Amino acid sequence: MKSRETKQRDLDALTASLANSTSAMVVSFTKLTVNKDQEFRNSLRAAGAKYQVVKNTLARIAVKGTDYEQASDAFKGVTAIAWTDSDPVILSKAISKFMKDNADIYTFKSGVVDGKLVDLSQVTAIASLPSKEELISKLLYVLNAQAQRLVTVINAVPRDLAVVIKQIGEKDPAERGGAAPAAKAEAAPITEATPAEEAPAVEAAPEGPAETAPAAEDNILEVPPTETENAE
Image 1 (cartoon, rainbow, N blue to C red):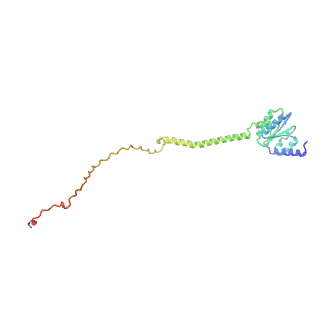
Image 2 (cartoon, rainbow, N blue to C red):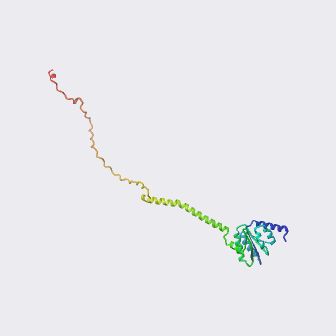
Image 3 (cartoon, one colour):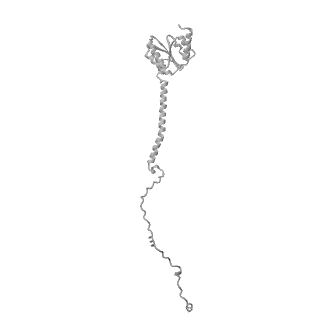
């Protein structure tokens, strides 16, 4: 039999753990085997939940003043509590599946999800929802897909612009609508220019002493003497 100190420690631990949780489920069982109990505990542990078989008196004290006090009426007969401080959808999935697969052993009593009292049908409905991890995964997929589309568009802009520029460059000047650039004149074939008619070259004088022009005196005409001069 547990001592008073031990019971107090158990109460304090349960109270603190429930205070930090977001959801809790109250179940009962009959004809429970060790293997089935271990199977249930393993499924809850995989869901990130804690599980404990509790005394009803202890449970009522532990939930007093909390959201779980709404489920106090379920603390009768054999009572076990499964609770979690993470995603309540995962806990709901684990509870709903195990209650369905082992209806001859386990019975769902009550539950509190995010401060609201729920029954088994509501827990089943919650279990059909995607978990937080699934929602985050879908959100990341959507964001990543949008980012990839954005990158594709950004990369397509310069590529498409280059294609347009190339296509414009391949069009005729008239089709582009702008002034036609001056075409490069093809260089005319270089032909030998016909030499202009030149004056006949003066033949060089033969070498030798050049004939000098007569002196100016030689060109003076002799005037015949007058009669006076002849008389003398």
